[in-house]
Length: 179
Image 1 (cartoon, rainbow, N blue to C red):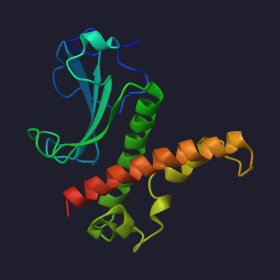
Image 2: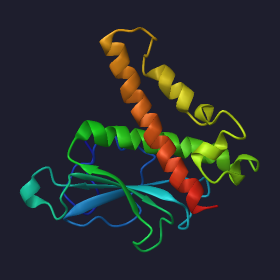
Image 3: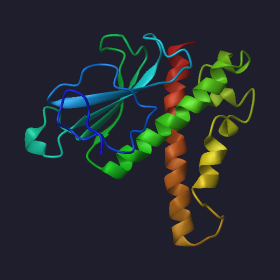
Image 4: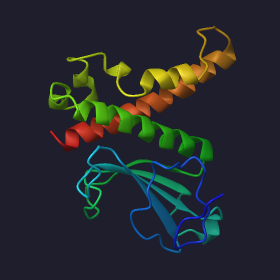
């Protein structure tokens, strides 16, 4: 497993190559950034994923993971929205996947001048079936949901829907930040 630069923490495998270490990590916590728009500049909206020590006694922040939306990746704190904070790695993994899906949606919307006028994810439905943007359908297909009524299949549906809802929330913040 890879380590974060400038600190001794192991980088969780679920934070794949899309997540960049754009700033120096400290000894107390590490941060990776997922820029949401194709230009990937310092002014790009981003999702930041903060990771700290497994041991709560060694933490400078309360949670093992913090997921934050930033209106401008290079801006000082102030426009941040904490999306989730906690210790549950499964939930952290789901938020990371949601941000990656949100990036695919934001890229598609940014490339389409008609869609770009929407001020929220809900408004995208005025122009298209917004639930089909980006990798949403491919993600659902990859989850193995079969449409059966058994408990396992329903749990799969709920978990995958939660991820897509989180992705749509991120896109909603992204649209509101730039319209």
